[in-house]
Length: 447
Image (tube, rainbow, N blue to C red; front, top):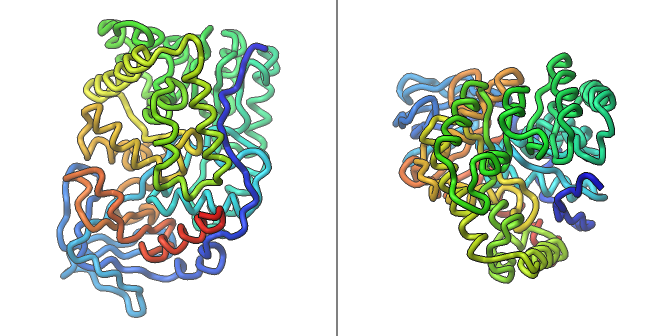
């Protein structure tokens, strides 16, 4: 076997109840909503605009300005923003939809978990049966959940058998309606190059892992747009088992920036699910585990225990590897490499949406400022998807994906979790409604 796929650990239990947030609630987003006298964090630069009124009509922001200058239309829903902060919704740039044989209810629950945590855009990175239908239901508002941009089934050492077949597969996925292509390990250089050439002709982007035979330099030069999990950099410049070579990293950073490519760090998942650090019992006791099927949490525990039981696993080496990844992310940020927020949920104790808040802390540990962290999930993502839609900042004409917080996320990025509510494509949910939906999900799993 040329490629052994990383087990995602997705659990697809039949769920008994979905949060009462789907089709019936979408009508509330069809009118006008006004956030009145709110502090706006527009994310076009590091600033706060005090005393603003933001008007949303349908799925678009239509006005942003001082409260004294912006009239609230008659009949609009008014949300008191006094003392609160309004920022763009965040993005999961390496996420997944439920795998296996999920029920529609479970799919809806996963979408709710993302949106409830302020994740208003998800770039799916492994196309599965039913995903295109899920995308249609979510992106049109039938389900309250993030806007989905989805990769097709991955290109890997098992799914690709020749350069010509790789090229054909590109065109097939383009015609099927996938938004981008996912690269997994196992491709040969001729297969990878054929894929890249066909993708350029088809006008479809590709990203993900860096196959070992291809290497990071060649992948950058061939047009791969995202390098997820920081894949390829430590392998090229040391750092997996020894010290990093700063000169090699500087060269790779220059290549990456010149190619306008991006990295998606997934720091927490990689530390646990690949490097194998963490106490399985402590991780399984995270509060958000109540929102995931118990057998799924047990599966994550079993997998981490299996990693740590391997004869060649060494905890000190694992810590060095994780530390080098943290230093690498900090160096990338300092060098100006484009960073996109992502967690690789749901898998290995990364519950959709909740995992993003743990990732924020890991990015801060790498030396990124609150503004830099937030930009990786807002403005940067809007730039990445600028050919698809306009979002990622708070301004007229942008998609109305918003988080209202009680405290300032620019002072402490953890304040993103101090929510008053979330708006997805113009549909508002107060924190009270969000907590009700989360309680229904927990109850469906017996928690």
